[in-house]
Length: 68
Image (cartoon, rainbow, N blue to C red; front, side, top):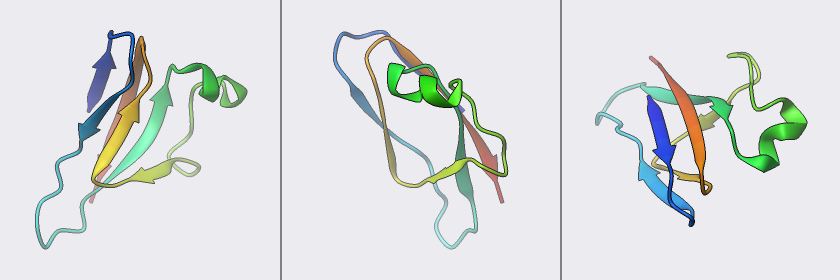
């Protein structure tokens, strides 16, 4: 899933999760300045699980991968 925020303020996105499902989303890429210490990328093994919402910083792009 691709989340894009080209606004000057942070935007919270809701990630879809089906009821009674083992579905999860992993944070793989975030172009925000805070993630630069991680080179803005995480492997699947090191990725953070995202549930419900994810806040995308201003002028940033985020890539989430769905796992089941």
